[in-house]
Image (cartoon, rainbow, N blue to C red):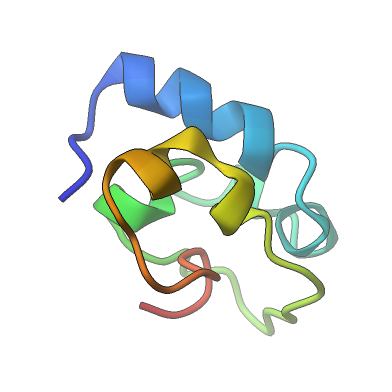
Amino acid sequence: MVEDTEENRQICRKYCGVCPSFRHNSLEKFQPDTLFCSRGTSPAPSQKEINCYCPACELYTKHSLVIGHFCVKR
């Protein structure tokens, strides 16, 4: 499990902030606004998956995560 720490959130922001799904769905306006693999999916209404940057994230590799799109499904 990915720990919910400020350090991990900073790593996450490098990927989520530029992710097409994150940007299209304005996920920064809803809590949790980062680290979805640890903190849970976004409650944003009418989410559309456009692309997934999760596999590029160093937390994804470090923690051997096996599914992407953590912002919209888990």
